[in-house]
Each structure stands twice: as structure tokens, then as C-alpha cells.
Length: 455
Image 1 (cartoon, rainbow, N blue to C red):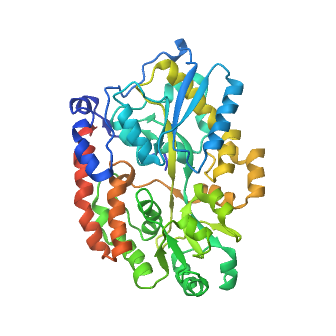
Image 2: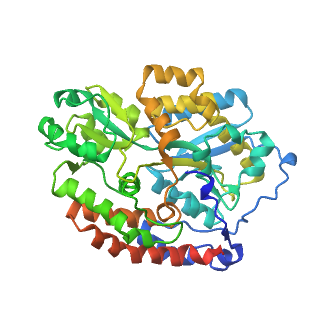
Image 3: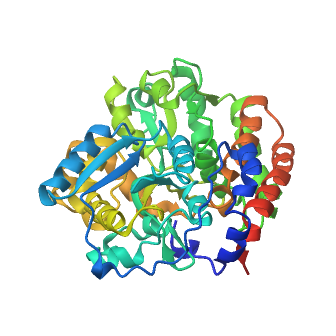
């Protein structure tokens, strides 16, 4: 994403607080997206005089350890405490995934157990912001001298709204095309990924013939997954989930064409199949190729008994694009200034060039600082794992702002996934699937976002 995410609309604090900061909408949110995030009375601005604040001596960090990164996160803590021995950091496993972290954060909002740093995924952070649960970071980061210009502008812009920075990029990724080089050789294909989906269709019969499963491509499904990678296919057909908050593109000809492309690939041509776990199935050699997160790179390389190739996602007839995803880190507004300052110091530290390179090396997530790419640490990673370069180059050349329907409408990701899974699992016509979910998406926007925006 880019700074285009900064909308001219602003949150109406009065309307949010009057409605109990989305608390009154909890039933609707829960119905469409699992647990809602309860609100607080926190302000949407930061008036703290940070020059007069002393950092706390202890903070808690809630993480789901993306990319199986718990050991790396403990190493980041160790490095931080070497430089700041007066500040201890407690790492808390707050859930197995982003949704569980969000649910726990909701439950803590009305208690004395608010963390000082919390995961803020691409589909959850805006909900935190609507609820007044997170601190705008501009002032506190300026106080500690964090150089925002050195962050990848796309990744930094993912957490911007109403002219403020609400979280910082941390474990960030894009979908990537993974392929089995041995299967590619057996199929007589060039050692590269398909440049377009049309080219993939030309290659697919050969890949089917050498595939253990009889299918060329493993596709994963599930919340926060299918609606993410499908953006590439949809954008390639000229479609969109939405134009900002206008949902009419969802049932437009181009988006329907993308859904039909997916349906045919699975149910008519037989080139793709739904994987139980695309990373595991691909690593076991069951499928010659898959679409998976750059954050899965380390795990795939470890599990595969064959040489793994990586490539950009293919283009469609109208071009291409790749969405960014993963999680950032936010500082809760319910914490104290002292703890917020210490958390900001730690957050800035773990995203410094050498530290984001360490995280990238151990997980496959993309370095969030531009200078990290050229650092000695990252160059060593690329020399050892050249597949990591693909993710970095794809981010620079192909990344595109996600459609607001997925990331700004609470539950939008889940609703969109339900429509896409109807196409994948049941072979439902795309026009029927998308027209069926459009009213749910519109209701989610009308109830959970529109009342809290000022035009």
C-alpha cells in the first residue's frame, strides 16, 4: 500500500463515543468476522508532552510470533536490553494468529491488562483505530528521533489514515509464486515462474503430468488468505473489490471475470486444487507450484527436499499487482505515557536495519527499512538464500494498495473470503457468489464504518 490510503475523511470521535466506540455494534461485528474489538474512550489525538516523560522500566509485547519467530523475537529483546538495560521487555504469546491476538486485545481493553505493544495486522489495525484503542505515533517517534524516511514507503503507508501514523510495519509480506525446480525440469519448462496467467495455462498440462497430485497448482483457502492472493488475479483482469468504500466494482464485469477464471482453473481445466495446507503440501512435493506468503519462505525451504524457485505473481490481461500483508505493531492508547515511550523505543529498535534484516533472514518476511536491503546483514541473507531477493524486488516493482473493502471494513476480509470459497469449493458461478456477499459487505460498512466518518 502507499500513502494513498490516507483518506480525506476523518473519524468523528463524538459519534464513536456516543455509540460506545463500536461496542453497540459488537453483535454485528461478531456475526461477520469473529470477535469484535470493543472500544475505549481514548482520544484520536496525542497531546502528550513527550519531552517530560521518562520511559518505564518494564513493558509487555503481545505477539503471535509470525513466521514461527518466537526465538528471533527473544533475540531482538536481548539486543534491545543490551542497549537499554533499564527497560525489560516481556514477550507474551497472545494467540496463534492475528485474529486471536485481536480477540485477546479486545478482552483486555476494559481491564488493567492492556499490553504496551500489540500486533496490528492489515485487516485489524483500522478497527483498533476506529475504536480509539491505539496511539497515533507521529509525536512519540519524533521525540525519540525515528527516521521515517528510511522505511519502505508502501509498508509505512499501510498504517496511515487521517494524516497520522497508527502502527509501524513489522512482519510484512506479499504473496509469492513458489515452484519445484525438479518438477519444472521434468516438465521441460524454463527455470522461472510464468510471467502471465495465460502462460501458466500453457504450462499447466505439462505440470499436471508430472505432479504427484495430478494438479499443477496448490491454492490455499481460509480467512485472511484467499481474499488476499485473489487480489492478484482480480487486478490482472481489471477488477476490484471496491473503489475506496464504493462496493459496486465487486459485481462488475471485470471482477466477475476474475472469479470465473478461478472457477474454471479448478473445476473445468483441472489445473489447480485446494490444498489442505499449501505450504506443507508443496514442501512435500505433492504440487509443482503454489501461491504462498513471502513469510513462509524459511519454512518451505526447510521442509522441501527439492530446490525451490520463487517468482513474481503472474500478470493478467490488464496487468498485475501484488498486495502487501502481514502485521505491524501498534502502541495501545490505554497504556501509560511512560510505558508508551518505552514501547516506542523498542518498536523503533526492532525495525532498525540490522534487526529487520535478522527478522527477514529467519522468517522470509520483507525488511521494512530500505537501507536494510543493502546492509551487510541482508546481503549475506540474499547470498545464502537468493529466493529472498524475489520478495524484495516484487515489493518494489509490483506492490499495490489493497482495496478498502478488504482492509478497512470490519469483517470485509471474511465476507470476501466466503464468496471466493463458494467459487473454489462449490464451483458457484462468480456472478452469483459476489452478488450474494455484496449485501453483507454493504451492511458491514453501513453499520460499522459509515457512522464514524465525517465527509
